[in-house]
Image (cartoon, rainbow, N blue to C red; front, side, top):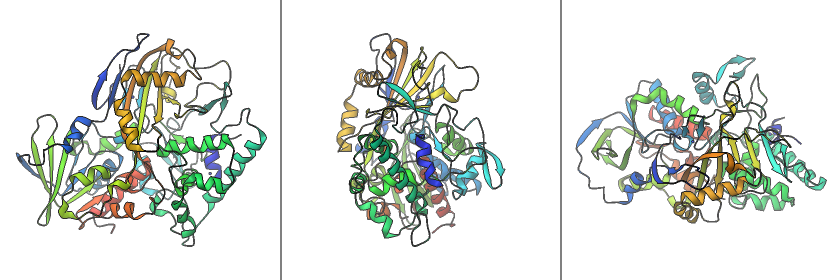
Length: 537
């Protein structure tokens, strides 16, 4: 049986921790394990709900462009503008930029707090390839194919699955799986292979990255009208192993189940990756101890002088032929207005509808945008998780039947002799029928409750994991990623929210794509910058 990424890519031919954000509670559970419960800056962000809209302006600045939001899309926009010599500033709510690609570190290793890998991009994503060249991830080209830095290509062993009491190689279930179920897994792979090769009547790929390059042939866009589970039922897929795996994959990119995402989005996960490299197989991924924090740090380095952090933008209003962006400094409490020609909003729609003045008449239906909450826990261990039975500790480690995504081994990419101490990063999308209820649940949990959640799940595969644990730091994302529910990718709500306003306000967040992946955020930020410069309509 082939690996998960081969399963996807064969269809081609398929965070003591240093953390950012406000601390909600800090406590020590049993067994002398220390740690903290942290997350994005909710205290400052929630001031949008308070009466600060009449704050008195104490200083005025002037810039040609203002970027609101310093996640991947905002940083990508800043990178592109900086190359043209444009005068701009970037305003970020958090203490550091990075969005859901933020990272942390301790004395053992750097580690991710969110997104943790980048699949090899396809050759049509030229600007992303240029950035990877700038950052040293691509070292050159051979026969038109990128040569990737060997240090950044994921080392072996890459992935394993705990199933039927032991670890198997790869994440696609096969160890102890009945032949009838294996047949369905192979049939599913063949179907996704067909979608990967498919082209619409317009000559475009049916599924690709970025989404703006995908075919709009109704034969494929109609799949956005139904759920992925409906589609699988229509195809008579009944294997519990296949259904577990499909739900795992939907949770991986969307924080949702096959019942909740559209069939188009579900298929896109398997059929859109078309990376090519001279020195790596198409199923390879780029990863670092800090995950995609490495990428956003590279973006930040290029534009760091333009960034203002720990600042809350609370209103954007029209001023004749100019735009005024008002923000409050989270430290000093000073209210500043920036008079500018154009604004790039690299913030999610649930923020945009609160800060945009009604005078802009933005046709946004914010209720149509559903964001999945996540919990990420970084565990510092004194004992080695290598096992005597089954596959050795891998970069990606998943437990069959679990609602979590398992964990990645943060210092897997660390060079030199392997350390006895390890950091693993555990991921748990908070799956539920209602994202708001899941957020309420997440916000109500204590550190002790999260600790119990994580250890109970991991004990399935590592019975004595607590004996070797010295620290667990928990990070909660209330709005971790956009969920592409049926009729969203090709629906009016997303399309309307993405359209620029008066050639003054441009939208760049990845929720404008409907899929929260690094490539989409980077593309959206770059496209918004091109609109500012008049290169794109």
